[in-house]
Length: 192
Image 1: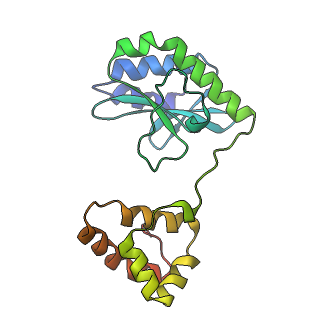
Image 2: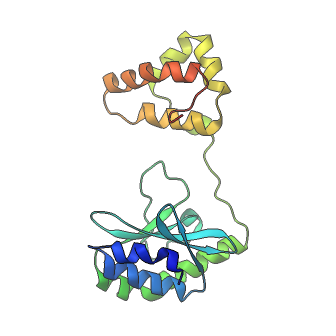
């Protein structure tokens, strides 16, 4: 146990029993406990394997390369359609954690083996992302905007594409596009 991480388990209110039990299970698998992003993160030779985090309605284990794990028990969850690599196992009570202890360990060991083997998730390329029609119209109408957008890093391009395509209403998508055009033209990312 890493004393730097203890605060996380002491501050937990709703999920304290669950996250403490998850900690014990994961440490029993021989991983190193670290504090990353304010959460307990378990590593193998400095590579992130799994993270414990909690939310309002559940606590979860997040496997960084969960998309590469065999989901034979059908319990690995993709948080949103845009999450490409990570997968969660969610828990809503301590009994679920206790009942799934052997399964949890199997996933942790498999995730460590994935890391040992050097396997990597193949991420979608920027052209594979949906382009909101409101943004496509602006790109088609302005060579300067198109050139500025194409000059952005792939990560910045993806962030904009996701941001523009998220709203259901065309009016909202259009407003987002208009608001971001000056940033794109300045060579900045969505959150710069």
